[in-house]
Image (cartoon, rainbow, N blue to C red; front, side, top):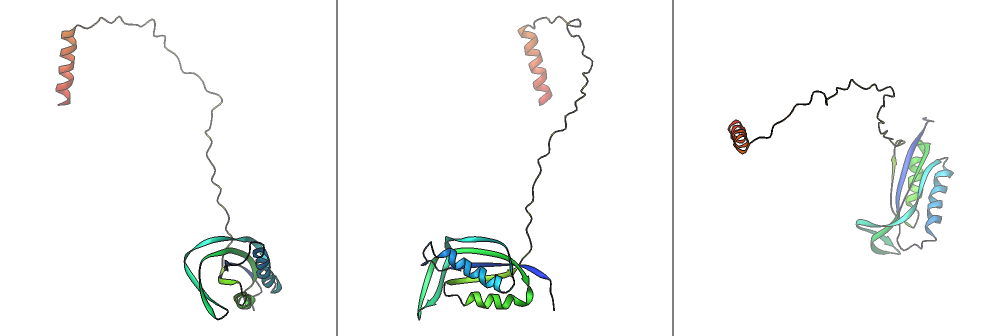
Length: 159
């Protein structure tokens, strides 16, 4: 017998005809089933109304109805694996469950990305600075003939 608890998650869809006020009570019914079997709730989300990707039908009062909207919620819990089938069958018997899925999962630890901070050297030493003013050359202005000659030389290099 395996006495080690594992982490499971139930994802479920509740019928859209439920009132907003009765949705938390339905979630509590599911929590109660899990806790009655010895499960420890790790996290849960109150069901919220969402559009479905495709229509889902369910037989209600001997009449098949199609739904395009439902309340989606989930519950993560730890429990021994022997009681999982009974938890699943009890939840499936609830009248307001449109669809549910129970899977074994792992704890997701959010990855925190650290932004590197630039390392600043506090002891920056200035390099030697040359005094350019003493070495300044006198530049004579170019004539238009000299400019044309320079331009033709540059064009010849490129081609």
